[in-house]
Length: 208
Image (cartoon, rainbow, N blue to C red; front, side):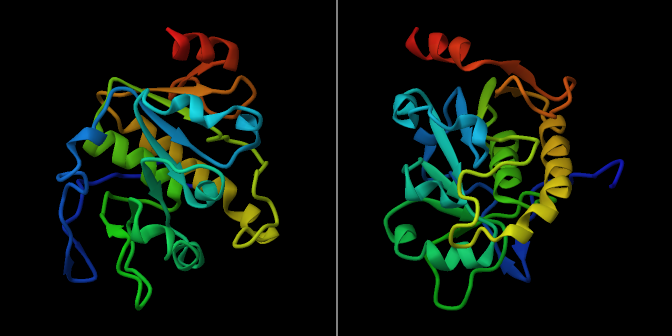
């Protein structure tokens, strides 16, 4: 496991193709405070994500679109991009890697060292939106996946969990403006990276 990951500035090209440095340039309404990042972790099971609508920009990862439509959907896995091709025609989807042939609806943005859709969501928040607070739901630092063993979520994906989590932690620690709050009291996130809040506390804030 690497001890340190260096994050450089947002790049402008992906394999010699020019990429706009700000994917939200035409979407200023998505630069809100706070921001919500929704992952696939089991800790968010049972929480109605519709309660977040209108409270701030919602960034979801990969298969979240099957159950809920976020403001921005981040995707890194190529097989997930292919699954998303119809959804992406009318909804905001973002990746950091070249698109599969024939799939032109997903937007591309290079935001440094990224190895998962969750890391992409964090980097977008840190570098582009820059809110004072970002609440993370289901961005668990432990095993457990709401979409376990469904399409494009094979069992072997678990092998990458530890490495993905290291990148997520480094991305959060790279932030100078945003406080990340993990809505989950049972997790492996280091205390010097995020604050913790249980769902009872979170719901009180959402209702205020």
